[in-house]
Image 1 (cartoon, rainbow, N blue to C red):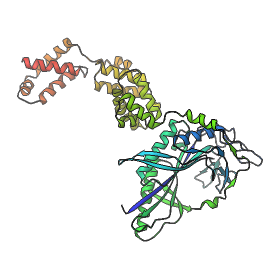
Image 2 (cartoon, rainbow, N blue to C red):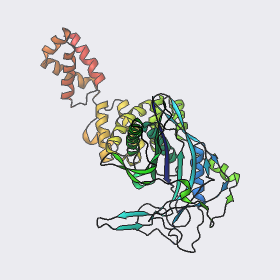
Image 3 (tube, one colour):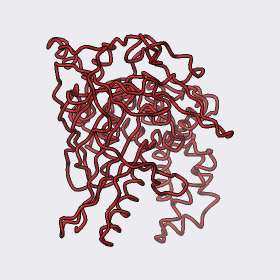
Length: 476
């Protein structure tokens, strides 16, 4: 290809600590405006910040999960810039000595595996939030000021919107697995900036980097990259260049819009944070965090393949979230048939969750309930179609499957004596269908099966009926 797209991502992730990064204010989403504030997070004169130990732990967990080198030397810096919602006129962050450096996230593209390198992961504080009213007023809510963040900066190894989506999917899944963030983009706990330019591989010419700020969904990330890719290529074809600028994604127009000229690192006038002296972490502190890191998504996927004899694709789907994987394993505890459980979860359960935009932890029934339903079908108590109907009822009512089956009288009829009478009755009423079937018209057999199921209101055991019907037709 003549044109090569070059994308790097900057992801801000809010950490799930109980308190903020430099004070004891609650780190809780929402609440009455300006009710989660104190002199420290408001930046009042004389207030002294104290670094939250849990923030370091969570950041080290993330760095370890993403194969980073962890620095024992901790230094905080002041990043100077103006925003109305930046209480101190600077942000306490990390400049030249990030907590985590290097590392990578491996993604699976249609062609092959690809490692997307990471430049760094550092800790910093969040800013407040500006709220613009219909009366052209701007109100400031500082509940978010001082909320702990990690900023994850990728290397420019991403070459398409789809690769960016795969990277972000893997990143979010891993962060949720290690329980450092809930990654709820709708609540702002995961925000993404895109840096993009395009190289003409024939001439060696490349455009200047454009930055797209604060994208609030993976879909927006993909669309913004694809739009900018086309815009940069068009400029290259016209012999023009992009401006060094910061842009935003307009969801209505489906295009990026200029916000401001993009500054350089020197504009931030970094300086050492004098209120938090540099210090060293004990090696044992880092080692203990790393040794207690929970099982990661790729590790769980490999275990599912080995322990449950699942196909790689199935194992990948079932381990896409920790909650889904746990629900699968909890279900298998009650029914020793992992492939059958996998089929039900990847089919009807996930389809319903996706249709309604729900997560597995919002299910109204338990893993044991799902296992009990599968056992009912497997043991022939109800047929597969009835099982699907019972599952739908479980989604809506939360009732146990045996309760639903009993209330609605859905137990499958498997008694041959009872079914034989019904088969005889259907054959007596449809002599022409018998003739048609014996003449080679296979659809006639299906019609007879349908009539039997109709008379039993779908409760006849198909296997038993099939055998009885075949034997009875031969006798006539």
